[in-house]
Image (cartoon, rainbow, N blue to C red; front, side):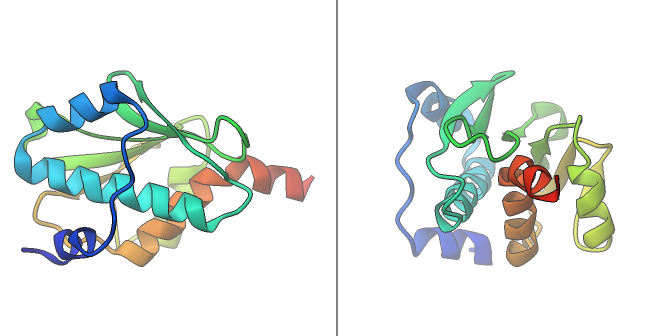
Length: 151
């Protein structure tokens, strides 16, 4: 059992807010499903620590679990998914019309693997740099808020 799985098992999991999202999670292969549940929980954990973010909306975008700051409008959507074509990889996706992935790449060039302007890619056997990923999630969930502060 890896560190991420142990960490997930030691805390209460956020209940699914959307039954369609829950069905998508049930359809993932077991090992990757546990990894994606870890990412999902991390998103909820980070959101709960930032008062301005408030409640997240959990939905499907392009058939992928997506997390939106619909009520507060403080940030950009975050999606997570696994594709059968890349069986040993899964990813966290960000809005490609932002500079989020570029900012992550500058901040963490040796910590994560990136694909274009769109996502952080994880290997199924990777130990995730949780603190760094938490920072990336926080940046995404507050990127609209941060733009307003700079204005």
